[in-house]
Length: 134
Length: 134
DNA sequence: TACGCAGTGATATGTTATAACACTTCTGGG
DNA sequence: CCCAGAAGTGTTATAACATATCACTGCGTA
Image (cartoon, rainbow over all chains, first blue to last red; front, top):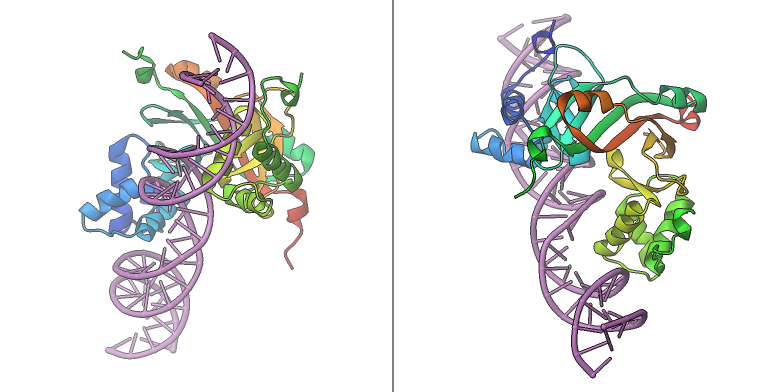
């Protein structure tokens, strides 16, 4: 069963539209960029509207927050729970999602730290942006 | 040679004081928290003062930025260049610095992405904060 | 002296995020 | 049907984080 099919998933108009906007963009979008789109659709024009929708989508695995950019992307594989890792192009803000074993397990066990979540974000240049600048 | 001994390291009063403040805190501090301390010392009271100092310290490996918290910590091992990884306590904001091989090399090579920097930040509970809440 | 550079001071503004409260809508139980 | 509680939304205000820009200073050096 995919996340989107779960009976307890309440995809209200605002949440659905935010998810669509993210899916259309193929890159990380800031909350206020999304809000501008939402406003154009008459679906809300104040920050809490978009932040609430984004929180919901992130909690339910349909979107991810990119800490490095203070921005959001649609999840590339909503069908399974996973610990995502990202490669972020610093030029075009495109985001490639990948999966990786959490690399801090050993250090955490050694120190008694209890890990709940791990953020892994690589920054660099995507293939398209490696062209020599004119 | 440690970073602090490098001849080209210009540790001006503002920069030195910011570093001291970070070293005293043992936890991540927001730029405006640091700025408040700086102001109390008569060393500057506008945001650019502290952001400039922090940029310098981060560039020169004496401090790190914690993306997850939009905050900063002193580097635990300024003696060598390294790709840091962090374990961040969500309760007390304490930060434990560790080192880890960048886990996305394989995926990056496979896709042609050129990684310049990798952020690894685990969030959870430090040993002290795992006590049962009263 | 004149110049350039790094650092600093100061003002203003841009960007991201949340607190707080009122109101509505949905849902299940009597 | 009616109610109560939970979930969602609308709205205002503000907190928190970050940068652009320009002026000025001190210092080393050509």
